Image 1 (cartoon, rainbow, N blue to C red):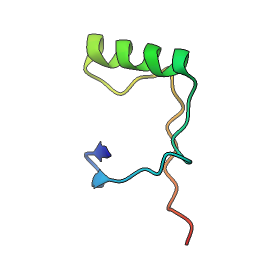
Image 2 (cartoon, rainbow, N blue to C red; image 1 turned 90 degrees about the vertical axis):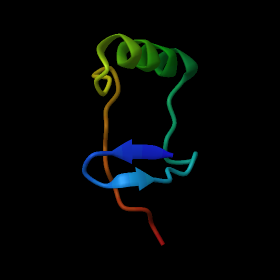
Image 3 (tube, rainbow, N blue to C red; image 1 turned 45 degrees about the vertical axis):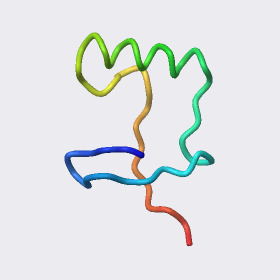
Image 4 (cartoon, one colour; image 1 turned 120 degrees about the vertical axis):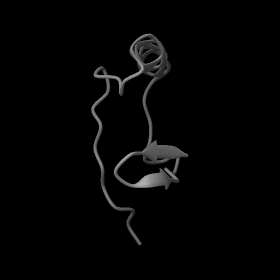
Length: 50
């Protein structure tokens, strides 16, 4: 589940939202310390394919 101020709650299929463990860990640490969306991850919004 992903929450965005632009779109509200969205389900993100695991096949679309993938990063390696080290990247995920770094992103979590950055989020917890800053309270902001991590800059260490490229955030891309695409509509799900039918």
